[in-house]
Length: 204
Image 1 (tube, rainbow, N blue to C red):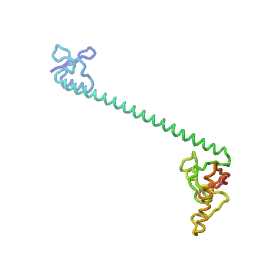
Image 2: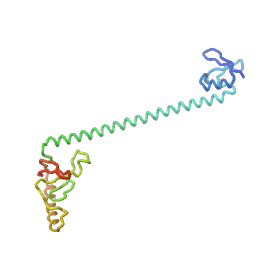
Image 3: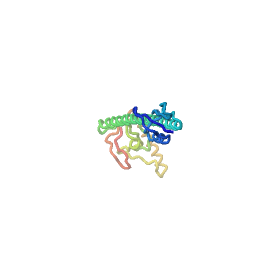
Image 4: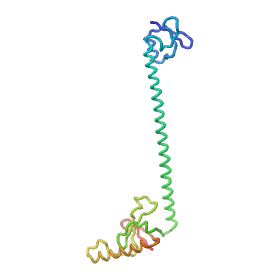
């Protein structure tokens, strides 16, 4: 069977059905282009005998490709939107933390050599001359469980080898606990670093 094509109003051909299929696969012609196979009527290539199934298959492939592209664009858009949202949230979170940390640091700096805290900030009291605090606005790695040693005070150690020493150490610890926990505010004056990364200060 010989088939004629018309593109841009100009007839082309004749072509065999096999050639017509090849042209469709290469994109030279589309299933919606017009062709004549009986010498009388012009019909779409999709309606040419022997081409119909092939044309339908190619059309289905085009539709699937368009759908796949739309899905891909939709997925990319969703992922991009989520990424931007997460970035904005993280930005504001870290910005708030940074600003609060800076505010706390500036407050400490403005007090000079006096650092004020409340009993609630005391984590534990180890013995009569040492207790631990949490520094507000400081990263936990540096600000949690910071040891403070009372300057000029040296009480018996809790790990003493004698019962008498342990008893005295417990009494000293309780006295320090009563003084610290019963205060409205606690002031660390002239703080400085000592052994074992401890803070040594005059405590009032």
